[in-house]
Length: 559
Image (cartoon, rainbow, N blue to C red):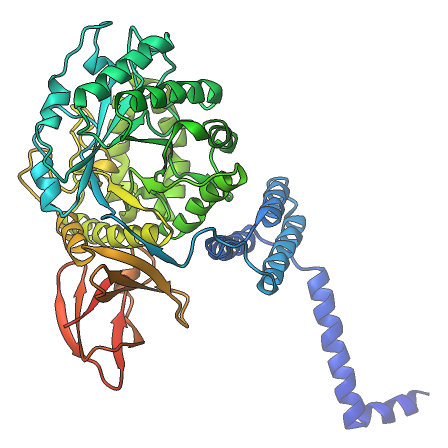
C-alpha cells in the first residue's frame, strides 16, 4: 500500500493537485481562525457607503431601507458585534447596487428652469443699527436685500412706536429695489419672551402691530417674513407647531390687510437634514400641511453640503405636492464654507462637545468656553483653524478662495434645483464685544462692518451677477464624468454661456492636477473667466474646445 502511494505521489499531476488542495485547506483554516473584523475596516466601509448614499440621494433615490440597515449596523457595532455590523453593511451595499436597475424617484421640477426676474439678493446681516448699506447691495449687482428687526425695537411699549430704524431703511430704497423685512416675535410685553421667536401673549395685539408696521411702509417692502429657522436650538420651540401656525395665520392676515400686493414668506427651515430627512421633520410636515393658506413663498436655508441642495429642495416640493399645492421656493439665507463641510469637523466636535453643550445651555459660560476653544485652536486641523479669529495669513487666504468658489457653486446648484430667488448671507457681520466675529457668518461677510474693505467674495459675487445678468434659463448638461458639473445658461436676449467645475475636496482639491475635458461649442472663440477674474481666450477647433477643469468654477462665453 505504501509502495503504491509513493508511486502515486511521484506523478507530477497528482503532486500538483495535492499541493493545491493543501493550500486551499490552509487558507480555509487561516480564515476560520483569523482575527475578528476590525474597527478600521468597518469605518472605511461606512465612509464608502456614505459617499454612495450621498450620490444616490442627489439623484432622487429613496434610501429609507438603506438608512434602516445602516442604523442597525451602527447599533451592532456599538454592541461589539462587528461581524453582525459587517453583514448589515453587506446588505446595504447589495441594496444600493440593485437600485442601479430601478428608476430614481422623479424630481418634481424640470431639467430646464426659467426666471422672470433676477434671482440675486444679499441680506444685510443680523443686527441693523441704521447703517446706510443699500449702495453696496447695488454695487454687487443684486436687486434685493433682507433686514431683520425685532418687535420690541419698533414697539417697545404697547401702542408706542419708534419708527427710526424702519425709516432709516425705507429712506435708502430706490425704485427697482426689492426688500424683505423679517420680524422676530420678540417682545417683553407682547410675546412670551425676547430672542428668536415666541408665541404672542395676545394675538390681536400682535395682529395690530404687524398691520401698523406694514401700513407704515406704504408698499415699499415687497416681502414679509417672521422669526427664523423654527425648531432649531434657541429658536421657535419644535414642540409648539400649532402655536407656530396660529401665529403665522395672524401674521399673514395682517400683512395682506395692510398691503394686498405684499408677499409672505414662511417655513424658513435651517437646512439641516439627518439621514435624508429634515431635522424636526414632524414640525415641518405639520406647518406645510396646516399652514398652507398662510404663506405665498416657501423658504429653506441652503447652508451645509452644496451637492445635497437638489434633494433638500425636492423634499419640500414633494411635501407640498402631497398636501395638494405648490408654491415658489426661495432661500433667504445661504452661503459657505461652514465647518461641517469638512470631515475634520466631526473629530473637533467630538473633542469639545461637552464644552459646546455647556456654552449653549449657560450664557454665562460662553465667554469662558470661547476663550478655552481659542486657546486650544493650535491643536485644531488647518481646515478648522481657518474659521477662528487670528487665523494664519495663508489659511485665511485659502478660506477666501474656498468662499469664492463655494459662492458660485452653491448659487448655481440652487438655481438649477428650482430656487427662484436667493439672498446671500451676509453683507456685514457685527463684532461681539467678547467673542469677536462669528466663526461662520463673520467669515462669510462680503465687507467689514465699517464698509471700508471689500473681501474677495464681494468681487466674486459681483462678477457672477454681471455674467448672469438677465438670466432666462439654466439647465445642467450631462457629461460622461459624474464629478464634472456643467450648466448651460441662456439669457433673455438668447445669448448663451456655460459654467463648469469639478467636484473636489474643498480643502485639498486645489492641490490636485487639472482634469482635461472636451466641450462641443458652436462659437469660433471662447472667453474663459474663473471666479477670481482671471481670463483667457481659446479658439474652437472643429467645434470642440479642450478645457483644463479644476474645482474653481469657470464662466465660458462667446468672444
